[in-house]
Each structure stands twice: as C-alpha cells, then as structure tokens.
Length: 290
Image (tube, rainbow, N blue to C red; front, side, top):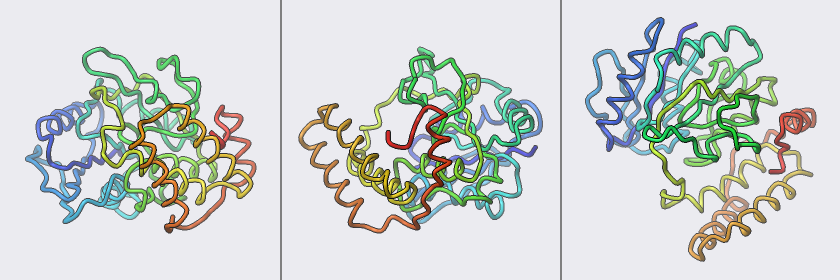
C-alpha cells in the first residue's frame, strides 16, 4: 500500500519541521511521499524530494489539510494511506508506516487510525489525547469514535466516500465531523498505542480563538451530523460540562459568543447520521450526546 504524508505549517517552527520530516524519511519499507503546505506563509527549507504548496492565506487546519490531500490527486487517490502529522511532532519509531500498511491490509473495515501522542521528555500521554471516554490507560488500543487531527492515518477511500475535512471549521472539531461521517458510511476507527507521535505537552487553550471556535464548531457539528432529536441533548450536555469546568469570565463570554455564532452562521450541508450509526457509536462507548 502506498503511503503519503501531509504536514501543514505556519513556517514558524523550521527546526521542528525538519526533525519531523527526517523521522518520516527514516520509516521502514517503501518511502513515504510528503507534501508540506505553507498555510498562509512560506515553507522553510525542506529535504530534497519533499513537495511543497504555499497558500497565499491561512485556510485553517482543515482547509490546509484538504489542500494537502488534493496534492495527491482528487481525494488523495494517488496513494492508499495518508498520514497527517503536526509540524512540531516527531514519529517515535521507524515502523509506523509499516504498522499502518499492515493494519489497513488486515482490516478492510478500518478507515482511520489515531496515533498515541506522547511527550518527548516524559513519555506521558495527556488524557485529552486518548480519543475515548475511558482514557485512564493510554497504552490500551481500542476501537474509538473520533481521532487526533495531527497524529493519524486515513485510508484515502474514506475521502472518496464521504469527502474531506470541513473547511469552514477552521480550527476545532473538524476531526469528529469527518469521523462521524466515516462511521456513518460503515468505516471503523482505531486508537493504536503502538503508533506514537512525540509532541510537547501543551494546552489547547493556548490559542486565542480556542473558546469561541470550540463552542461555535460544537454547534455546527451537531447541526450538520446529528438527528434533530439529539441536537439539543448533545449541546445541552456540553454546555453543562463547560460550566462545571468553571472557566474564567472572559473565556465564558467567548464560549457563549461562539455558541451563539454557531446558531446564526452557515455551517455547511446537513447530512444527519442514521440511527444505526447512533447505536454503533453507543456500542463503541461514546453515544453522540457527549
């Protein structure tokens, strides 16, 4: 199976980007073809053979990754598997691409693999980086209902079936949108603890737009994908969880501003999932109300 990789960059981490590309070049088996997308910025120097695309403006994370997908042909069809890797990450092992090939070859229903993210100094995995509710043991691999955006592998037939990431989201929840559409089309998602991307421990709230976009995109996610009866339940649960976390007043104001924006702005096409997909998500341990 042919493997490609998409990396988006703002051009502000040239050393980390080079280290990531070197770790991709060290992968066992056939070489992984890499495309680096400069998301509104020039691409720093990259090794020979790495293709680059420089966008005149920042299209956001899903928009930049969609450009990277199309660099491998419509829907990425020139390869069988695409890796999506953060530009400040680093593949910890040299057999990750081979593990992906083997996993997809052995399981024809498998559409997406979520890697384990570990701190390069401590080896610790943050709870939020384990894409399931029972996240206390990051070393346990399992079927899951979503995946990590900057550390994953996708069978390109998934894009042919359900399309790419939602450009309009710009940042936050674009992975869950794609995951729900993939699951609705019959694909499965695995979290694999043995496929590791080293990444420094960070807090998502470091982004200035975090609280607004998390809230806005949560509403868009529900409006686009859930049966009407589940939309108020899903959003009500997340509002309650947000309040229980006791955010600061500025963060709460940004969150409610984003929540309002999610209802008043276009969210893209609505394609509600089938009720049997709701049941599948429930059996996998995460019903689409949380």
